[in-house]
Length: 282
Image (tube, rainbow, N blue to C red):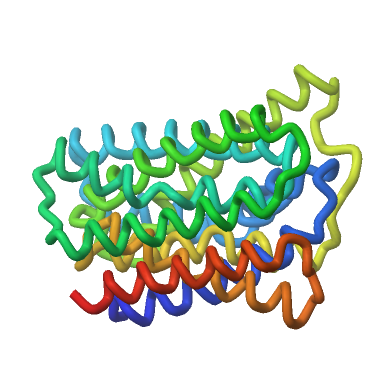
């Protein structure tokens, strides 16, 4: 599968999940449910591929530990941010990681990007922050801290996952690799819930349909992203996936009549699209 096709499929899944997540009650802890669905439906096949087709080295083991740890931090930060602010504020902030990924990739891995790529990534990140500013509600300061933590964790696991791709020949092996992090994240969320609310599961459930769709999208979409990283820089790949936010924004305004802060959201979407256009034109 080509990188462009993988990114296109990933964007479709990101849009589907993004639109669905906007309408799920935050008190139901939807991330917990969709991670559980992924672990039940998709992860076993991935674990099998990871165990039978991969030659394990010390480097790959270290990358798996780093990736899984960063995933735990990411989902913890994302879940906590959602406690204080809606998806419309939190998600664009979290998705503004490509600039950090590009900086860290340059510093630690010697990955070189042309000036026009830096410009495209920077413009798209500016659009994300403008879009996030359209949702001024909830405890923004608390949400920002947790969203920033999730963003930094995204940059860590994105770089470690790209470094792991030469060691993992099959697509389902990539699914297994990221599912280790998802399992660790789900266990951490469960233990946190047990400590905080004395429960092993959220008090409120999401629908079975939401679990099935979310569980499929949340794992396979990112596995497609990792697959695209086989041939493209991590910062560029993650930037391109943010086109899903642009599509989801347009659909939420036009189809679902979600007009809250629509002018700033449209402005942010236009700037994101402009940045991605600069990036693609290089």
